[in-house]
Amino acid sequence: MSKKLTADATAAALAPASFEEAMAELAQLVAQMEAGQLPLEASVAAYARGSELVKFCAAQLEKVESQVKVLEGEMLKPFVAVGEGEQ
Image (tube, rainbow, N blue to C red; front, top):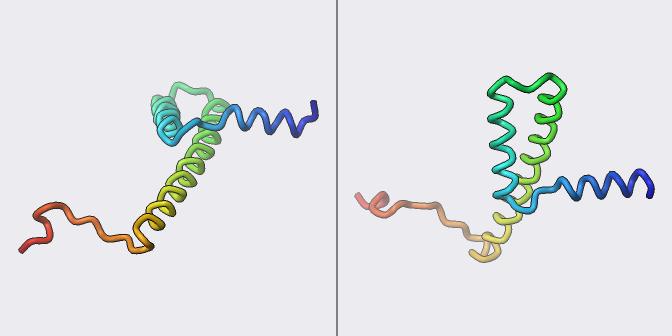
């Protein structure tokens, strides 16, 4: 197996299954880093993984935002809580 195929398979195996899974892993990484218990190399690896997870989550949110825009006919309305707009 070539190195590219191995790298692609590794990246696919590391990709989170969902937005929620990515957020949970990100929260776990943040907790580990904030505890200050990780050695330097592990901290750098955790930071790199966190960056990947943030990019994944941002991409997922962009997809959902696009879907909402289509569903709302490109006319997103500002959220107003019940009773907030009445004066």
